[in-house]
Length: 289
Ligand SMILES: [Ca+2]
Ligand SMILES: [Ca+2]
Image 1 (cartoon, rainbow, N blue to C red):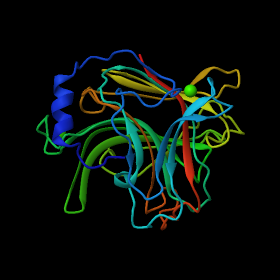
Image 2: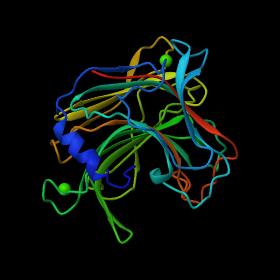
Image 3: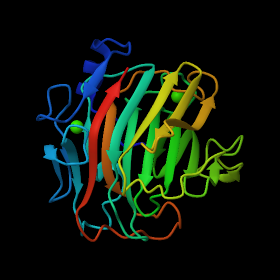
């Protein structure tokens, strides 16, 4: 989900940094290193705790991103997120994370994200819309068997009017049902149901069990996959192919994790409730290769 453009200071740093993908491995077993910028904790009571002890983690240690309960319902969107992001930008490569999402009630608008994001407020390709190169895994806490996958190349908001280009797939692993941006619908949020996944994981809830999530980003494709640690190994959720810069992002970007509240419930379109208590996104490990 796009947010406000990054500050100019960050843009300067990113332009000076090498633009090629490089190896990056984080286990969250020690306090965050300078590989990460200072965490964002916007809401009173928000926190980023690293390391936190978790016996289900590979190494017993995780990062906890805490989004507090009873926040102001008007504080919607990623601007109010509890968030961490890397100092460096990464280009084409395979991005992977082992994580467990927060629990929340059915009417809550809590979203957790594992994503790359670049938006410096400029229209680099001169198509009339600010470039927004972003690849998202997003989890709506009230639909814990579903995963939202989105690939963005353009986004701007002017006077409350949004203009963008993105392609989304939503998959419900418990049923295999799948919804996707229809061809030609890349400038809207509409999704239509398409053919189901060829497999299901009936008991999958991203808030109950640890799982590994990854996307492989190349010039002409983004392939999303999940390893539910059930013995089946990596299984593909979606392979999006298309023209570089038009369908597939081409600009290197930092890696982010966040938790935030959306005012409108993604599934029902109704007003969403804020969490009734602390919501915690737990991240065991993250890597880029
Ligand atoms: Ca543009
Ligand atoms: Ca760990």
